[in-house]
Length: 279
Ligand code: C2E
Ligand code: MG
Ligand code: MG
Ligand code: MG
Image 1: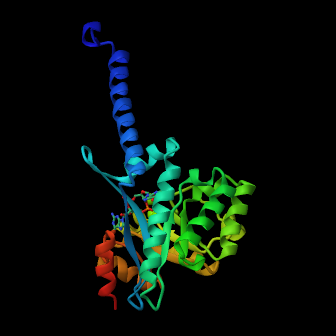
Image 2: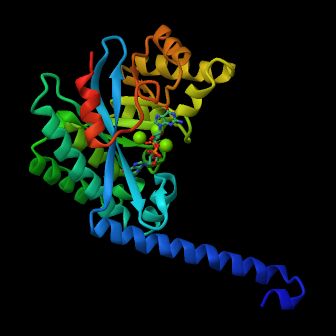
Image 3: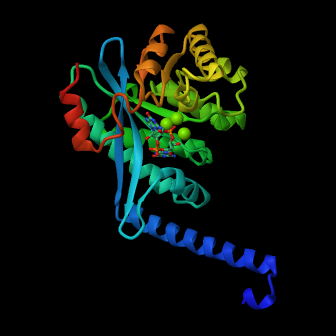
């Protein structure tokens, strides 16, 4: 129809938009089905204390392989899940699988692993209920609170909601750790670092990537490491791919790292294999 209108741009645009809409709603219904059928997998990326070589934890990262679409990145489907209510059952599924799995691994370990799960802002819509769900899922899996960590972004803290702060304090009170993901990329307000029950800062991978080329990135990483130290917070670097990045971080006394240099996110069998080679 648009062709006959002699280049009416608005109509062409609308047609393209509705194509995108169709693609999106198809993706949404496939995602819904995948969640219902529990065809969602959890991958695990090791978190390593480079000073000792100990794998002290793992981050749970959701994976979805669709029969038609193939592999779809969480960068693509998490926003769709967030715009619908799907983020809730998706989160529950990741939580259950990850906690159960890590509890199983910890039975055989002298140093138990800590599992980190990414919490979307939508998880904090009903903070009281979320806390209850966390308690229930951990109780069911048998995983200890001290072996569980949540990763949240700065945007959640900026809402400054009393209910959210209370929920974080309750989680913290149970012994759960709270980590700020992608630290330095959001609208950071330093005051929340002293007022909120935060345990750990995770330096965003964008700062780590060009650490040797870009003077600013090295400076920012160092500032975050020093900030964490001053406030008695833990600090971990994500996206470590190269030896020189590791060496830089070690020279600044940041010993906790995560990244392709050590391992990609792995499925449960490959992660088990990775644990065997620890040392
Ligand atoms: P994130 O939480 O910041 O996770 C780090 C991302 O960096 C992951 O991408 C990971 O695979 C990737 N990564 C790890 N090491 C390296 C490295 O050395 N180099 C590079 N270039 N990348 C590395 P992934 O798995 O595609 O996840 C992307 C984002 O999607 C996550 O960022 C997180 O925000 C979100 N996400 C993933 N799983 C979940 C989930 O279960 N729930 C929620 N709400 N969000 C999730
Ligand atoms: Mg994360
Ligand atoms: Mg991150
Ligand atoms: Mg991210």
